[in-house]
Image (cartoon, rainbow, N blue to C red; front, side, top):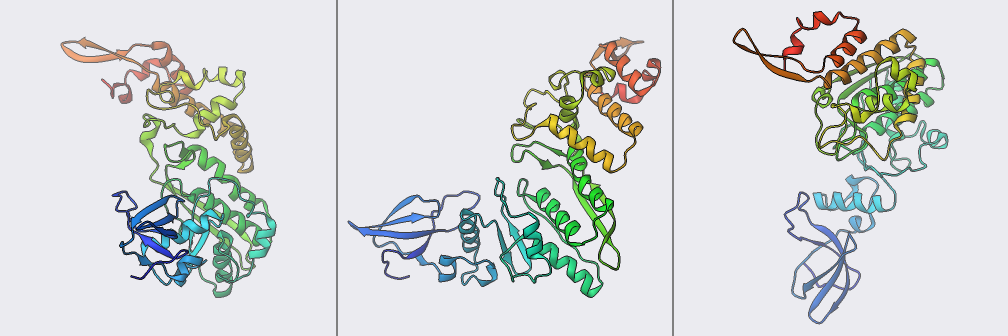
Length: 375
């Protein structure tokens, strides 16, 4: 501890009891009338008695570093302070050795164009300022140089930007391989389809991935992409029938209903999202301000064409999605048959629509187990 002067930087322990109950950085702005006046990292003014003791901030934390290994005071508070200071200057990327920490800016930054791809190609980590492209470049050239498989792991909280980071890595690899082909375009266009069927609006993120994915990209000896395999796992299946307050079902349902023509919807006996139990629940929401569902539907259909889905396959997918929505609207009525509690379908018209879409005779449904699951 030391005698404080105006302009000194210190750590303040506020003991808030919050999730992030760590020291916060602050700058001394005045000492007067028996008080020390500080301004913290959140630009809030704090007053303390003159005899209060504070821990001084290391010069590396005052100036900020692009690689947190260089921090002289390697504590949780110093790490958060460094990330916060860089974030306020739109420096969303920070290294910790060969690890890249990315903070979601929740706005568009012009740092992902072809100029940046060329700038970060064939550069060592640390040679330029931290960037997601540097991670992709390091993996690509390590594969080329050492002829060994490389792995990039992207993890983080919901809403931290994992999905976008994955797309940026794929964008960089497709561009830097130098052999532009239809395969590369197919890999990139797989994302809109995966997001449509596996992402949804949550309270924390309007485009939250509700599944995990493993992407395996294959390169030939020249370093050109020659194929890819995408595996999905842990899909949140329960979201189809029930969503939490202020959340939505999977994007594809809303996109389909917003983007299809009136004639296409009539073919599948579809109307609007508000007419379906699975999309319009008491605590849920139909709309998402940050998304244009109708426009997204055009993107999804274009991506399906690039991945060579046939018209018949697309029609089958639409029929199955429609069946899911109609199933959610089935209502059951309790009854007694031969002194046994049973139930029967209350809205037979909905069942007729489902049987038509599945091309199954309506009588066969009464022998299907799934119709009795809610009895």
